[in-house]
Length: 101
Image (cartoon, rainbow, N blue to C red; front, side):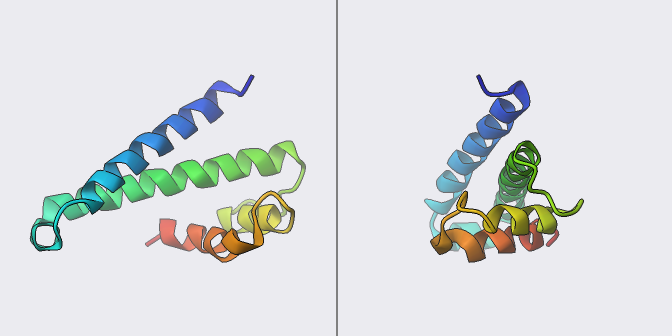
């Protein structure tokens, strides 16, 4: 059975992704002129990234992979294994930088 923290992170990620998909369905004209909607998109993206990075840190710790304390270190450790496919490696390595924007 997964840990409660892992379940909570997955749930938050799923909800944020649903919200981002809803925002993506909004016509560009409306989105680009609505600062509140843009702020919501930014917040949901931040929550999604935090959930993904937190899950990656959990996996790295469980597998004894972490090479350092930062999310960049965690993602480098995770991508050095077969946990993340080669096709998603660049995306995974970019995630810590997106979180700080």
